[in-house]
Image (cartoon, rainbow over all chains, first blue to last red; front, side, top):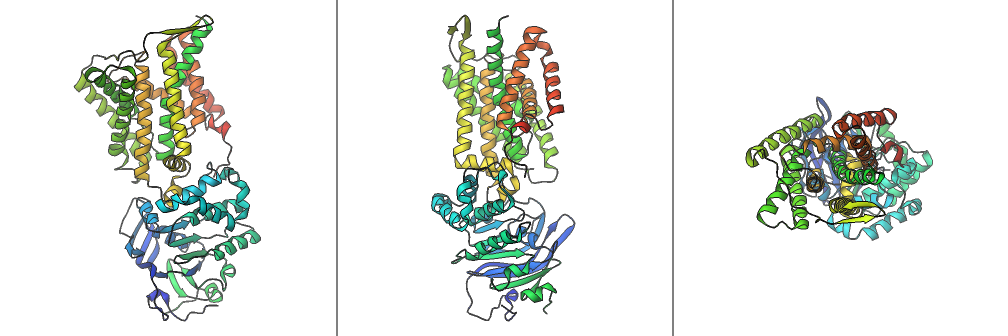
Length: 255
Length: 293
């Protein structure tokens, strides 16, 4: 278990500093008059696997959407691989998302944003957005099929006909197709039977990250317990410091 | 009045209207834009083909290609003027409707001012021959209309099935939000969509000009029919639009030979309303294989 020893939030880890994949400073974001994220700071280093836990409606998904430029408005700095992708904007959600994706972001959204008429194979193809990923999409698809063997038989089936668990596999597989250096996974076990949810989390844990990093938002802390490098609590739009899974349940507050 | 005349008219009308309706349907479902400037693109393409025939070459296929290309150019212009500036602003659907309608009105007035009110006619594209098949006579322009529109639609639909851009467009048709998550740029894809649908309108303009003439307001009626067929087929469904085009082409041919061509709009909208009363999502509601998201 990873008790709060170093505070990654302030950007000064005690161990050897590694390359930062993501550096968020003073991020606020929301929709219309509603402000969901309040002056949030977050540093993710390469090779890290981070869990963000928090209750419904406390801004986990909005944080991910803000990094992808999909919220209604946002301000603050977001550096992805050293490239500034955040900007102060009040409209145009999604206008710059494809540039952010090209800069190395793969967002696996909550609730399976799928294309219900595309087949599983086309779906995986659509995830290989960058030029290099598109070129070797065949090998990437094989890799996805190794992670999610049940998809092998379903390659030519429209996604709209799949079950919830299969859809989640497709959705995650689509995200993993990308040539990304940062994977944001939003509630991978949401709405799934406990057994299937656990297998999906296991698959995510087995993904070899290399230089990339992965941030997983979850409500079920027990699923992440001891398997990620850090667990960060989130409460009303702010990150509440690093916490162990047990402490996060009580919304532990660090100074 | 014989049965073959009816059948051939039905097929010709279905092909032309289907071309228009598929264009409108694709634009609506991928960009969320009900393109009311389609009539302007239609007339614009017609004049483009006419200018080409006057100044470059009256060779039929070349005129056809010129019409398709000027239609695509018109679509791209509409995209730059009416879609790009407003597509991510609040209330885009209504704004887009009004913006494209305004472009349609301004553009047709501009064509009227530039080319004058006199209608233009294109040279015969498919020549002056005819085939007779077991008593039925098919004239060159009927055969040519059917063959070229089916050919063009096949090429476009194959391209959408197999190419990467086509995959992007189809993804956007199904779920624009998810499309932006996987990195599909709405603004760039919109130019492809509007160029292709504009090209389809250009094809329909040149084909219809074999029967009617090219005039500044000549695109209005095809646009109304195209929009209503797209609606009847279920916006966003290509197969639905094809079936609706056949149904309404049959209706138009039947109305023409029974009670007279001037009542076509009345019978057409009666049929459409009847279909939408039973199937609110249009004909596509019967075809869908996948569950709703």
